[in-house]
Amino acid sequence: MTMAIAPVFAPPGRTWEDSRDEMATKTRILVVDDEADIRETLDDYLKIHDFEVTVADGGEAVRRLVEDGAGIDVVLLDINMPGEDGLSLARFLRERVDVGIIMLTAVGETVDRIVGLEMGADDYLVKPVDLRELLARIRAVTRRLQAEAEAAPAADDGTEEIAFGRCRLNLDSRKLFDAERNEIPITSMEFDLLKAFAEHPNRVLNRDQLLDLAHNRDWEPFDRSIDIRIARIRRKLEVDPSKPEVIKTVRGAGYIYVPPGR
Image (cartoon, rainbow, N blue to C red; front, side):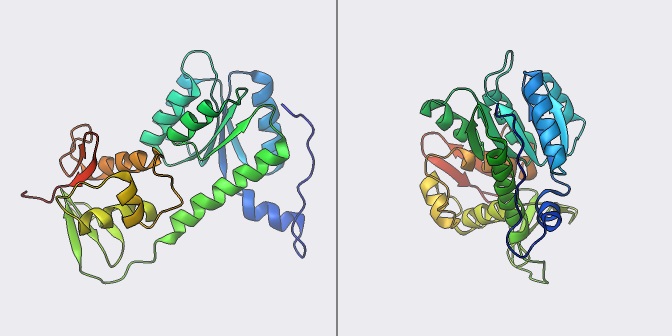
C-alpha cells in the first residue's frame, strides 16, 4: 500500500475547502480488508479528506453492519480475504443495498478483474494502491451515483400507470407505488428498465435488447450489473423475489414481464 499522503488540489478559481466539501461531505465509506495496517491507513487518509469511515475485517462484520442498517455509500472491498472472499461479499451487497463498490486486490490478473466487475463492482484497483488515485476513484463513483439518483425528474400529475404485480409504475412522474399508494424509491436506471418491460409485455428481452431499450449503452452486454438491477427491482415488486411472477427469467434467453392476469 502506498503510504504517502499528498494533498489533492482544487480546480482553478476554487478553494481547497470548496472542493473538499463538495466531493466528500457526508459520503460514508466502508473499508473491508483483513489486514489491520491497510484498514488503519485507509481510515486515517479518508478521514483527513472528511469522509465518514467504518472499517470491517471480513464478511461477518460486513453482514452485521448491513443487517443493522448502517449507512454506506461506497465500499472499498478486498477480494482476497480468509473465510468469505470479496467476490461473495460483493454479490451479497448488491442484493441488499445500493452502494458503490471498488474492489482492491493484490492480484492483477484480467480474469479477477472481469469476475469482480461481473459481480457488480463499479471500479477495480490493484494493490499497492496509490492513495491519491483511490481518492479520485471514490469521487468518480460518488459522482456517478449522485447523478443517477438525481436523474429522475420531479413528479407531476401524470396519470399513465402500468401495473407490475402489486405495484404500479407512473410513467409521467417516473415513480413506483405499492398497493396502498406508498412510493417505493427507484433509481433512474430502474425506471428505464421497468419502462422497457412495460412497452414490451409478454416478450422475452435479452441483456443486449434491454441495454438498447433502456438507453444505457454505457453498460457492456456481458455485464452482470443488469442482472443485479433486475434482482433489486424484484425485491420491490415481487411478493416472493425468490419466485418471481412479474419479471420472470427465461433460462438462456433473458427476462419477460408478465402483466397481471396473464
